[in-house]
Length: 295
Image 1 (spheres, rainbow, N blue to C red):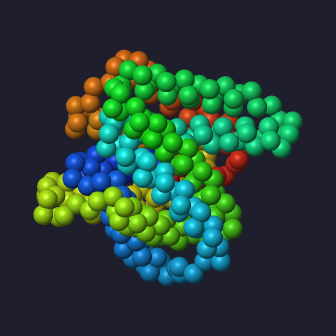
Image 2 (cartoon, one colour; image 1 turned 30 degrees about the vertical axis):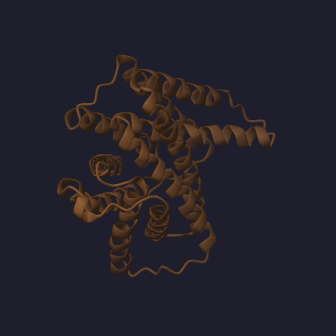
């Protein structure tokens, strides 16, 4: 049942990405981050109240740091979705598992641990080979920058994932973490709008505007389902099932947007998924009982 919750979470995240793809036709990246944050604040506020929880936290600075790196990752991912094929943007973001493996290797080398890291290093290299295969045939020069931004969104997601792990270890409930992340999204989005531009609603197509509220709700549903999936610990099956999000993204990319990806691009996506699953398996041995990546 836990694995099914993770598949459902991945579906909600992929559907949210569809909404971002459509809405980006009328809204800028900071606007989408802002609206996603506002809707999630309302949704998670209702959840917190329904559960009788409190928003008072003993570790506010941890939430600030988690929100900062999470919003940077989120904004980068939204930008990549707007400028790349959906399947490509989704895959680059799911490189977060490989980035975590890279951080584990770096930490072991930095602190001089004697544990063998050869398998993790090979997994990391495999993941970046997959990135090269994915980007070269699917991007023109105008998309190259978006590809780099998408790759960095995965690194940001990995950093956010590690901070969520730290928050979990000090006893912070998931709904509180998600709520403050939503607050951070709204604040950063609002500041970003001040320095870029705001799209008047009179100029927004109703088909794009219709996605504003669902984007925030789908993001919150994805977070909630992921919490249910990890309620009894991060099993390998559950952690690996998060990559079903790429499968959903591929289907949406082909059916809804008619994206065309070269054969080498598909091979690269397969390599990244494989390296991500392997990284999850190896990571679980070094960092047991940790949650999965967030979006």
